[in-house]
Length: 209
Length: 197
Image (tube, rainbow over all chains, first blue to last red; front, side, top):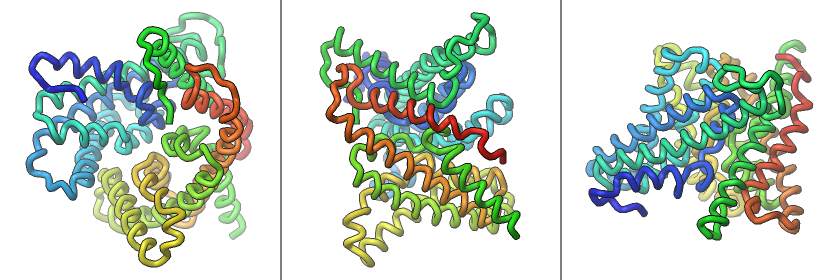
């Protein structure tokens, strides 16, 4: 587990992006991720939403950690997470209505993210506010990074555009923006990150259940 | 009356095939990949899931329609639905243990997995958003359970064979499962447009 000494806040962030990246390494919280990554804008917005929720939840739980009775901590975590997700849900409905129409359901499903609950349980409930803040930012950034990579490829290959701006004139591989393409994209990207691990870091445990 | 029945049937087909929760909506993936390694776990999970789905869909509908709408607190639906599901799973866990230990022994573990997963939340949220009636919510919930069962059983039968295949190292485990799911999803795309809701 990452330590919380003064100089290692950057380590916490790096941890969330690379070593314990939610999607590519831990293989958690995949459901809404694949659904919204069929274009870059939605993917990035979802990543930002998760970053926000993760960070705020970590801060809140870290602030409250001395007042929570151990036996009811899971329902309390769920309450805190649902509260912040409701805030994010409403903000997105107000500030980005087009994107919200397409992915409203999946924003609401952030509440079921195992990764946020696990982080609250493993880190925020046992550490002070500032390390928890950085841990939340790190995990959220890792998620944003993963979503950006996935949606980058899906939109570029499927529509030939990025964020709505056309890059190539043809639609190379239309399948990529269909649900099936989402599965393929994540599977291949996961295998790619595994390959990097095996090749350059000689780690022998790929992401698997 | 028959018009009503046709609508129910359409909802059922839509939830199970056309907008299959796993292959088209990408929900329930964590459980899907975890449980589909063996046929027996797949079947056990399907049964538990369909039962829990139907009951929590009905409970959520009742609470939404008779308590939340009149009091105009529908914006709290995320929190309330999670509470309903978690509470119901906890209750059924306790009840099952007392009433039928043999059933609990076989299916109990799946209950814990179901409690906070995407599909269990998604169905009440969709029901609330689309303003389905009670019977329609039930049909939708039942369809989603059957769709999940179909997905699990197909996946389990493939994965059991996949255990013996020679897969390159980076792909072993989850990446391969994703690619296989993508292929099945591609096949399910054939159902789109079957019935226009």
